Every structure is written in C-alpha cells, then in structure tokens.
Length: 190
Image 1: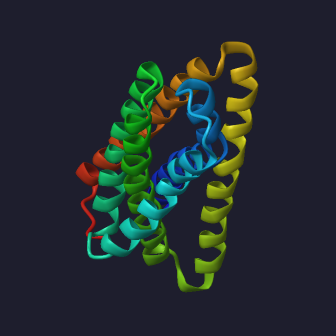
Image 2: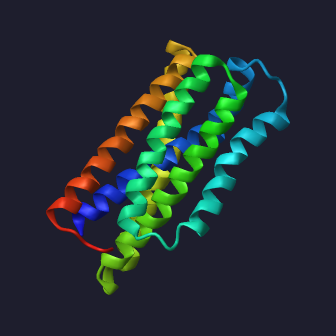
C-alpha cells in the first residue's frame, strides 16, 4: 500500500500545487504578464481549473484508479508545458488552455488517487489514510504558492511562473514514472 500511497499523494501534491497557483496567482499573470486589467477575465481563468477538475472527477470514475492517476500525471505535465508557453508568449488563450488541461490532470489524478488508496487501505485505517492524503493536498495548495510569491519578488512573475511550471512538470513526470515502474513490478487492477 505504501508505494501506491506515495505515488497517489505525489500526484495530489502536484495537482493541488497547480490548483493553488491558478487560484492565487493567475489573476496576477493575467494583469502583469498578459496586460489585461479585467477582474472577470482573471476570475474566469482561475475558475476554469476548478470547473474542469470537477467535471473530470465525475467523468473519470470508470477509469481504473492506477491508470487514471498515471493519465492525470501525464496531462499535468502537458498542462505545465502549456503554462510555461503561455507565460513566455504572454497569451491569455494559452493560459486559459493551460488551466483547462491542468484541471483535467488534477481532477483525474486527485479523485482516482483517493480511490486507489481507499481501495487498498485496511478498513480500520481507511479514515487515517484518507485524512493523510488530504493533508498532503492541502499543504500543496498553499506551500508552493507561497514559494512562488517569494520567487516572483526576486525573479519576476513570469520567470517564477515558468520555474513553477517546470518544477511541477518534473514532479508529475516522476510520479508517472513511479506508477509505470510499480505496474511493471506488480500489476494490480486497482
């Protein structure tokens, strides 16, 4: 169970870090990097990741958890590449695409990661394991964003955002590689 928990929690960390970034920093990206001073547009970009995540969580219920977490991690990597491109190009539409793609990856990896660990957890420890999973996710929604804020003071918002996207893509790629490795060592349908 531990390897499955670690990979699921790592995927949750990456996904929630991205969600936290979009909720906290996307309005600054829209204003400072894209040059758009419209709060509705900034809110739409920030809200799009949540809406996409929610819809994805509903639609991905039939995918086996381990495969969904792997797919979600791969999609998070793509979302982070798109985010880096959006910031490099100062493109609102590419930023919105990054939010939507990242929302798909986050929703799939988080919800199915939770399903994966609860399926493997002993009944008497299921609440403890689930709670720990949520703690990881909630730390991830705050800590990387605070780090992004500090980094932007020294590197600038665009460079800090691109650095965040690269770091998160690497984390999601490591998680994906771990899932593939686990699958090859001991195929499980969970």
